[in-house]
Amino acid sequence: GGVDAAAVDRQPLHGVVPRVVGLRLAKAGARLDRLELRPVVRRQEAKGRPGRVLSQQPSPGVEAAPRMPVTLTVSAPGG
Image 1: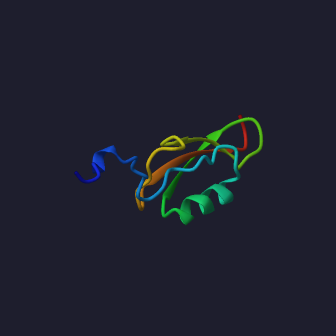
Image 2: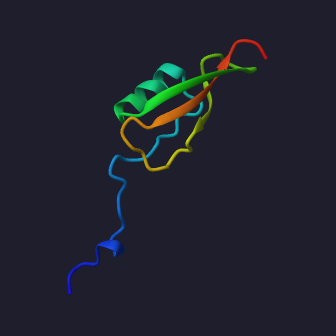
């Protein structure tokens, strides 16, 4: 017999979504750009340092696809 392709652990073709929570928006955006992912920014008033990524969707480790949107919730001044 040959190799059962379904039995081989499949690596995601385009990698996985990186963890960018806690990074500054510019750095998070650059990291997503390198993987051909599309950052979608939502601002939310929050305590702490403005311009930091508070959450992301989809979660880190999810299989990525080219031009896939990744929603970043970023802290805005206020809160």
